[in-house]
Amino acid sequence: MIKKYYQLAKPGIIFGNAITAAGGFCLASKGHIDPWLLVATLVGISLIIGSSCVLNNFMDRIGDEKMTRTKNRALVTGTISPRNALVFATLLGVLGSLTLALFTNLLALFLALTGVFVYLVLYTILKYRTIYGTLIGSIAGGIPPVVGYTAVADRIDGGALLIFLILVLWQMPHFFAIAMYRIDEFAAASIQVLPIKSGMRITKIHMILYIIAFLIAASLLTLFGYTGYAYLVVASLCGFTWLWLCIKGFSADNDKRWARKMFVLSLQVITFLSIMISIDVR
Image (cartoon, rainbow, N blue to C red; front, side, top):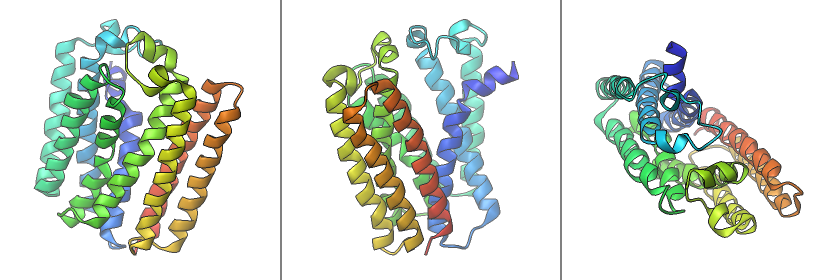
């Protein structure tokens, strides 16, 4: 049963966001990392994200019945009751909020809770009504690194805005890739995504534009003196590799298989980017 609750909190999403939060934290630390503050920040943001994921599962439990990927989730099968899920989400949220409030600062907590609002109230509702729900979701996903940044800096400045922009631009082609290789499931659940409304080719064009914008935004960290040239080289190699694979998509024989490769590569891109931000900060 413990494993079911663990899975309900979507550990993969928690881990991915913790990586970007750590990148934001290291960017603001400028080489002088407070290990205890880092631990408190990652624990706090992870608990809050876990709470959001549980609440998302609660809100999506009807739609999840229609998707192969989600039809065996605990709230769908009844292994965990809606009431217990809400209690679990509340516990995670309170513990996470207290951790950020007591050991970081109120700005970091406010931003984390803003991300919860955007994710649950805006994205979870709008994804069934408009294709722009994806953009709303990318805004929520861009907040964790800013939480990490403000946990150190206690302010929003150019560095915080840049890392937010980078994450938003990265998430759009990342989300599109998911929507493309799971297009049948999204259609069955009536989730509005660009590949369903406008087709694969238009989605690929959008992906190219977002990746180009991502490359430009990522380079600005070096151009504005936040990171060194080693970061710029790695970010450029990752970005152009992602762009190259995206362009190859126009001649792909199997769009779903290609989209799956784009998804996997997008995870590698953001992981390497976060690592390089952490070790090549100025």
